[in-house]
Structure formats: C-alpha cells, structure tokens
Amino acid sequence: MSRIISKSPENTEILGEKIADKLRGNEVIALFGGLGMGKTAFTRGLCRGLGVNDGVSSPTFALVNEYSGKYNIYHFDMYRVNTWDDLYSTGFFDFIDNGVLVIEWSENIEGALPDGSIKITITKGQDDNERIFDIEGLEI
Ligand SMILES: Nc1ncnc2c1ncn2[C@@H]1O[C@H](COP(=O)(O)OP(=O)(O)O)[C@@H](O)[C@H]1O
Ligand SMILES: [Mg+2]
Image 1 (cartoon, rainbow, N blue to C red):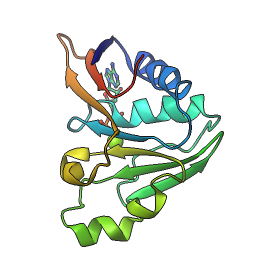
Image 2: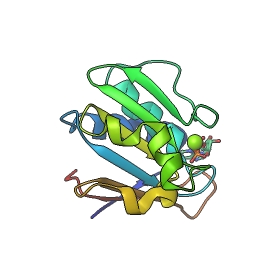
Image 3: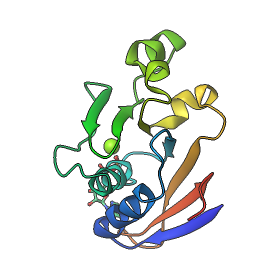
C-alpha cells in the first residue's frame, strides 16, 4: 500500500493525473471516503491525464458518466446503489474490461468489486485542505 498526502484540491488532481499515466485501460478504481473527501477532484485529474479536459463532475443523478479519452472512462456514483439489481442497471458489469471504471462511494458495492481492483481510501488530514490517500493494488 502507498500513502500520499494531498495538501490542496490541485494536489489531488495532480495525483489523479499521475495515476492515469500508470493505467493500461481496463482497471477498476474503487474510491472510498465520504462527502467532500475529494473523490470527484481526484477523478477530474485522472480524466485530465487521459485527455478529458472538461465536464467531470459527480454523476449523482446519472449514476454513471462516460468520457472518451485515451481510454473509455466510466465514472460511477454508487451513493444510491443499494441492491444487486441497482448495480446491474448501472451497466457496471458490462463496462468491466471495456475501459477504466472509476467508482465513487465504493463502500456500497464493495462485495461486487472484481479481484485486482485498485482501492483508494481517502481520509481527512490535520488541516482542512489535507487529504490522505491510501492506495492498494497499484505500484506508484
Ligand atoms: N486536498 C484536497 N483534495 C481535494 N479536495 C479538497 C482538498 N482540500 C480541500 N478540498 C475541498 O474538498 C471538496 C472536495 O470535493 P469533491 O471532489 O466533490 O469531493 P467528493 O467527490 O469526495 O464528495 C472541494 O470543495 C475541495 O475544494
Ligand atoms: Mg463526488
């Protein structure tokens, strides 16, 4: 596991870009951490690293946003996904292996994550702008 400390939203986006550079295009990236932890900021940076420069926001109502860059990116928000039926209806299982999946609120679907998923847990640091990223499943 690697631990990275981010000191600002910009720092978090740059971490996302750095991780984007390591992807092969079929990863599942499961983000854990509550509201305001920076899941969307991280995803915005990751998308930028894959050549997607705008329109990255929480897919709260859509449940999944799709972006097309170096790879297809499927950006999920699982906040309101509580059952296997809900999860199937997001297209989650169809998208696996067809692009990069980035998942906000992975807590809600943890049992459905495939083996080999990259797991990133974000917690608050000492001051308001600090976030601690614990990264499992990817060498960085
Ligand atoms: N180090 C940091 N990384 C990311 N966001 C931060 C950081 N410090 C403060 N913030 C603030 O926290 C909020 C994160 O929002 P967002 O990325 O939408 O979080 P989430 O998707 O986890 O709810 C933003 O208001 C941002 O300005
Ligand atoms: Mg979000």
